[in-house]
Image (tube, rainbow, N blue to C red; front, side, top):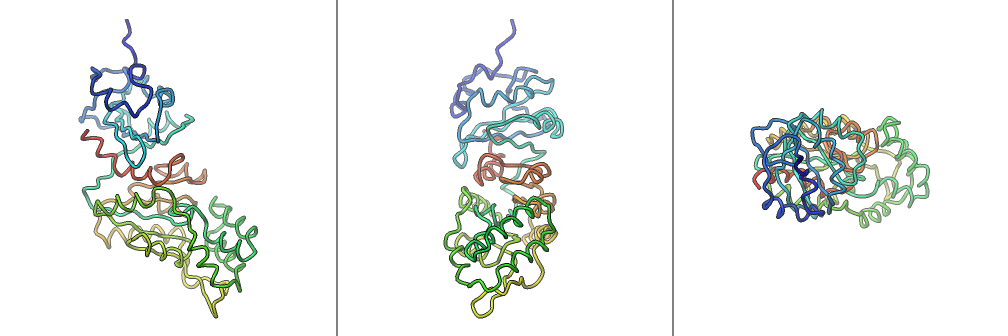
Length: 332
């Protein structure tokens, strides 16, 4: 008689898995589902997380379980309000990603060649608008200046990669000419933080890592976030202001896609770190994401999701905390 699939033997909720697995007599056997960790494996890591998962949700991964390449359970833990499950596959990352690419998932899942090591120095470099905060600051400024629709349409096209970023930024800023400086403070005073941001910064700093912002937005807002939340470094674009009014000009070089990648390289050298993570959502983040050891797209445009190494679709920055802490699961 064929032995039952482990997925059919576990509790419905993953919140109960850690207890159930301690009691379950599981061992390494091909094609039997989740298996005890074998540290000699050299394949991909598969990290899954959500506020809660039920077996029917998780069972969408059966194509991985039922192939000749076995999955091995590394551990289950609560982290940043999520339940995280770390698996190790005997297959490589490309094989796993190919098997997963057409699956409709209700939870977040990333495939990694290696895991971040918080015991070693590192830096996290983040985009600002729609990444550390939930808004595009230039769109909020434009709305208060009465040119909201014109500016937001250009912003959306630029983030999709349809326009040259610097050209689109300068054209949008030009529409803000003569807007009062006071509207910058209005926007800054009400910036909604991306959920999980403060937990991420705390996690990074507790590990001795650095956290920074490289933004195609504006220094006014990046420096406010640095002041309020303790970012170690910020770089963004400087709006020209004369007689307490915006002139419609950006001073100096624009922080574009290449500049973000350059800032990542600069910080890696400046802080003498061995690991880098970059987080962003727009097309102008792609070079930065590609240059990082761990490039994370969050709530990103389709183009960015497709090209990024890792993509977070359902959770927020708490998902980044799960990725950073995943190595803890190897010791459980």
